[in-house]
Length: 161
View 1 (cartoon, one colour):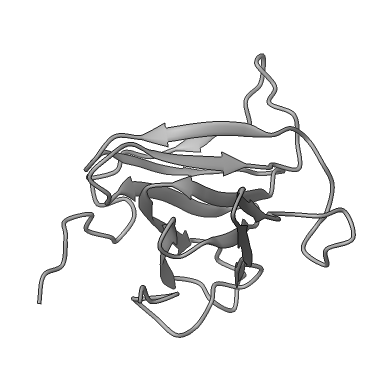
View 2 (spheres, helix red, strand yellow):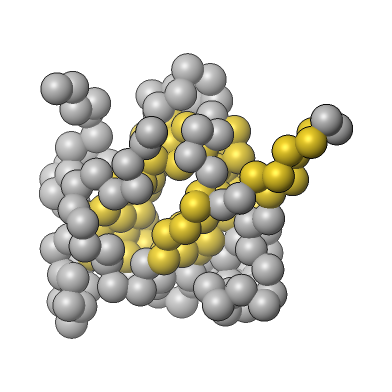
């Protein structure tokens, strides 16, 4: 069983995490990710798929306007969040989430929270995002820092023990 949050018991302020129900039958499976009557639904911007190859890290970035809604539908990813908001009650908190086919789940990431992911499965992992905003090609709401330079106090190496 994968832990919901490995690095801390305290969720970053504004973050929502929930396990998703998979309904299997002899024809296949169904899993609802987000509904418009869900308390975690704010608004619809677009839906997109991003992937990660085994061991690849895609990090760090945050949005000023956009809220992200992540669901890993194939493979496994370690999704990591960092609260750098000076005015947040959880300033400095890091959350790790292990999401994917062994832990079907939904993650809501509010604006100004750094996030990134690492594929931890042996095959390409697929992540669906349902952001609240449409991507603006002329003025992207993407604010990035490198994954390994220490700007965010997190080490992406596997933690054996």
